[in-house]
Length: 339
Image 1 (cartoon, rainbow, N blue to C red):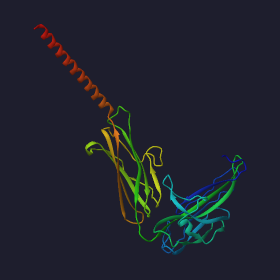
Image 2 (tube, rainbow, N blue to C red):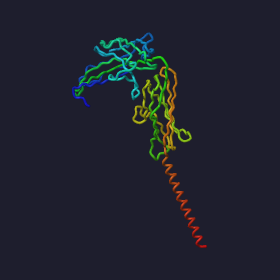
Image 3 (cartoon, one colour):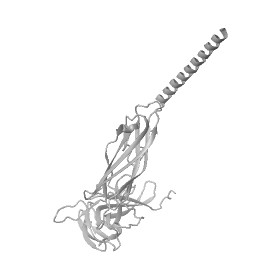
Image 4 (cartoon, one colour):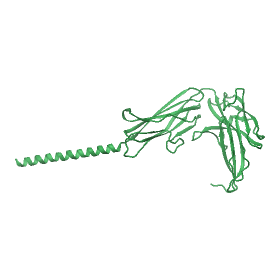
């Protein structure tokens, strides 16, 4: 349903990074540009790219973010946290404001909810992580963010609330049994070539990779295509996948998907059938725990031109044999009638 003129519409622009810049969307009567960045507070070790924490179930820990106002005017910002997830394009993003956090985003509590930061100045905002007693072991990812809602009026006179959010990542592990595991599902393979081209074709593979364990996983995937008697027809290059958080999935699609053209091999003939052997090699993001997953599927790849040629030759030979047999019978009949 399209909003009426003057009706408020809420939009969200989110960035999750170790340090990022936010510039709210501009309308016809937009206020002066406001920008800010969020990063982990600098420690004696130096600048951190993200928070990496280990907190047991029932325990708590504290840290802080540094928020810098890059604008020429004072800036009022709200502070909160939200769960992170891997979206369809493989980017790490935050839950929308209307989707409540269930894990680390819920456990992280900034000690300041709102603050006014003078122009070209920075402040530190402490936060506390309180892990529930019943939290399951494994990896959790969230973002601690500074956000700014602004009312803007577009060229059509419609008033819009644009909320810009900038966050820094929090990688949280609850110690216990870590079970790295990935699965490959919805595997589909097809050969794309004109019906007459049985020597050269394009083979495309689609699949969904899901993190079914409780650890962050980095992985790479490749496929090998073979024909009868295991003869290798071709293979794809090993492609690195986005980091998958526990419970997240990523769809590999060679046609119109989020990773267009990812798993494709060319120069593949049509030997009757093609078997695709998919190999997924992964490891825990903060360690060397190795996971290897293999799955296989087979499709028909009929060489229509050779089959048609063979059929025509077979028919011609059959007709010739029938005609030859009929001629021999006719010759015998004539010979017998002369006796």
